[in-house]
Image 1: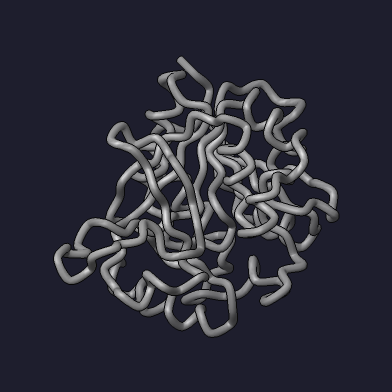
Image 2 (image 1 turned 180 degrees about the vertical axis):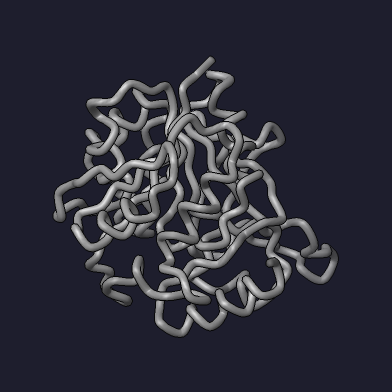
Length: 249
């Protein structure tokens, strides 16, 4: 069976929220919430926190959770994907699940579904999308829209409203728009190939790293899910996360 490892990139120097990995959410550091949620997934053989900061590393190590380790990485990586690639380049594994370090409500069953997809060997990468039900999000450039074909293969991702509906008065918008969720599964060899490529034109225009993979011809599966969690990007998001945690726990 494939060896699949969950990797959580966690850096200190977030532009909008420095040190957010250690911000307390309902009494626990955010990185602890993420690690504990990832550990609930059943298809992972190990969990690695890839960080550039000793404070984050110390926090994770003091949790003393079995099969959770820390990989110290360089501070100058342009993305979490590059940080993950450094963390795993000398390790033995077949596939990696990239779980964002600011997703304290990530759904363990979604991690397992992505692990199942990537273990088939049919796909280079896998990611997820959830239906957009709030019309305001359709035109919101911070909400990335995903397009995929009947087989679930990714066609494009955009901050723009895609697809464009030429005759909106005659078509219901229900089920048309999908919000991309920033969780990824990679075959190990493909991850190392991806980070070795320079950014493509579309990636630089949209500021979406996954477009580099599509530009390379990546076979990327988009898993449909109803679980989208919450990304903690600003101090204001902490209160939102705490309210959601009270509902779930």
